[in-house]
Image (cartoon, rainbow, N blue to C red):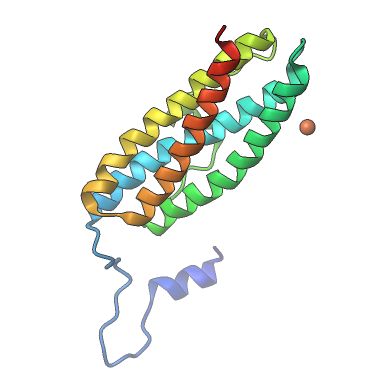
Length: 177
Ligand SMILES: [Fe+2]
């Protein structure tokens, strides 16, 4: 934001007969918005880190299942790229800043750091663990949104849960005998 536009926002004196405020007044309290946003920040960090893991394994997978894993991970990092934007914008709509640096993501995430030199089935096991870790983060984020009646966040979480649970099922099936 330029200095000029910042100044304009801070001095919102529009000479209106009615007093105006930039305070959010959406029916969610500040405490509710903060709690929901904190949950979503973890989901955002996890999603970003899983996008990176999916890319890493897309590039580095070796073995009999190269094609399947290469294709699946491409589909997933493409999906996750769309999703992180939606999650970050929901955090902004709740009045919070979205984390957007690697160090913030690293501090927030519960996803393990990927290892480029794993065997193909270890990569699948890593991806399964990561999709399940996001599922847990999503479930943690669900309760405050539900209590506050924040339907927009609930819709978003429901959609993300469906993707990660379905993907977990597929990776688990590759590991089962
Ligand atoms: Fe590629």
